Length: 215
Ligand code: MN
Image 1 (tube, rainbow, N blue to C red):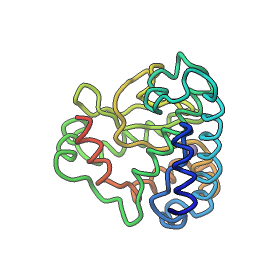
Image 2 (cartoon, rainbow, N blue to C red; image 1 turned 135 degrees about the horizontal axis):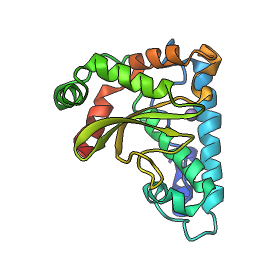
Image 3 (cartoon, rainbow, N blue to C red; image 1 turned 90 degrees about the horizontal axis):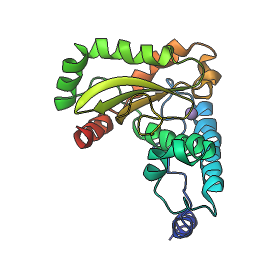
């Protein structure tokens, strides 16, 4: 067993959350998401949410609960669990719906569902990007399944649609981080350019898997 696997095993035995492996190299999403952004975003920002989540639940009745349980009750536990549990869930989800040599268009059932909900793939992309653009300050835009149908929503800070506090609740199948830390090193204040580049690295296969489970 490798040392990082031993650390992972020990942490899981004492119920600490751990950083999931990034499913590709830091430079794999170039030129759309740059290497430095990935290094800081995954290695520093996500790690900090994770460390603060572990600190927030240590020695409390919430230690040992799953991340999903913590997120679902985030509004009743504490601001630290809401912010950092959300941060850990959101980023773990985000790395998985990105991939190198990805983008393009969704296929199969998901295409039909997008057309049914939004009229066309282009209309969906415009509405999703608009949700990201109009989120004031920091937060996320989401494509969710709600009552069997697709909807677009957005959340502030590290909230997400699984939380008890979410204005619009549902199961996320795609999300985009619109915190400045997600794009500032490459795009500075040009959030629209980042959101446009994002489509080149969407892992539609993973989004379709999420959709198949959620619908
Ligand atoms: Mn982020």
